[in-house]
Length: 598
Image 1 (cartoon, one colour):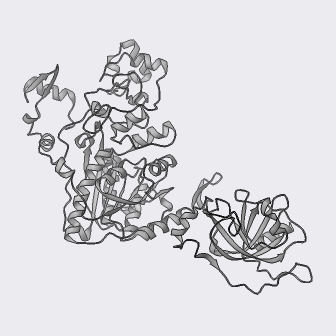
Image 2 (tube, rainbow, N blue to C red; image 1 turned 180 degrees about the vertical axis):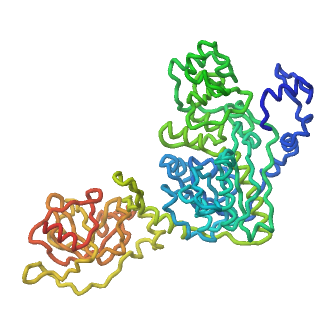
Image 3 (tube, rainbow, N blue to C red; image 1 turned 90 degrees about the vertical axis):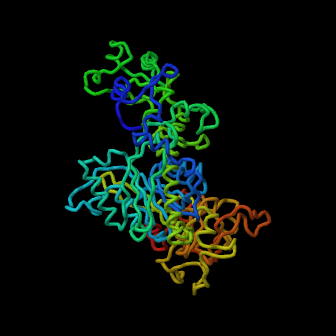
């Protein structure tokens, strides 16, 4: 609780600094006799129960960056925040977020490519546990420009583009001493430049907030200057006692049942034989010297405590801080009763994730997501304090919740077209369009369509000279116009062979990279034959499979092109390569003419 070593506490007991007692064979202190220690006094006089019932006066919206597996996001959501957008780079973590909260808008990808400006002045709160990369100190002031290239810069950029009332940054406690404090000074200077007042930062100990783990996180909370003078942030009160590993693995105040069985890594046979010799709460110092020397190798000769090696946890103490892997030699986290690493669900419980929170990806990815997370109950406690702050802001300066739907849709629509591609020769990166499946149901929202009634393209017939092309009488074709080539299944060939086709409906997927409002021409591709006839796209709209036919299915949404035959572009069928999924080619008339000529 107070960051004092065990040896110092033992001396307190031996010298009588505080009265000590033996209960069930364990020597300890009575908390009521330690009230002069601030942390103890705060715990005894805390208002945890009162604060746990705080309700938002209105719906407060939030955006979270670097969301990971969802520890911070879930805690903030439990406190009462409504997430309108989350961003995470890791694919497995994004799957975890979407699996557990399908209603959350999750953008998967590099935060550097996201434009947050559509959300300006619409979002109440922004948060993010930014990774602490090395900072550059080329500038003399250690301000905003000195953070370029770091992920904190991206958090700061999001703040400038969104202008939330309050934002929060979260990181390891070592950030304050990184580069002799220069990094932290730079961050503080940036926050000031952004027009925000930084609340005196604190390193919060998770064990104080109903988390059975010795984990510490630096919390930075900043309030916009025009608001900061009228309100005051109050840090959360601690829970009434420190929870232990027993509270995590068995039915307790935080879990209704014992921990469920789940997958987990295993020790090699040699390592298991060593750890079987370590008692609960022990480490390498409890091993026979010859066994410890062989197991530790070169570490045996190094200085320092090395207490993470061959470490078995104790049921009656909080867990040590979880790492991204439960069986690393230097940071061992052996189960207290069984000689094995902690399982996925045991890991998750120590981080206070509920049992219903399902992690996606490989086992390694699951451990990483959990190990990197902010403990849910710690985030929940901070979130409740932030809700109290927002309630004070709402009382001082009443405002309505802004509808972020259109802004989020705009951001996600832009992002769905981007992917980062690395050039292995130059080691540089660029952003290119990525071809993904278009969700037809989403089109109703993106284009504000009424079902089947509205269209992406509506054009009057141009002055096109119809008929077969020839040297004497070529078709009147605009070579600069966009052309879409689409594969046609054999059961639909007849209407294209005789030129009677009036409609083309896509398959169940359609590439997002095709700009529907720019399409002008259409050419059917007959498998094994190629392309020959040119059609003009009159209308592109939402429709359904086999529309207009006897066996049409109005529950099966498709993209529909209403087309009009222009004429035969080539004397015979010409084979071309279908570039997208071997089904589509998005090109221009000029490019296709050049390709056929070659």
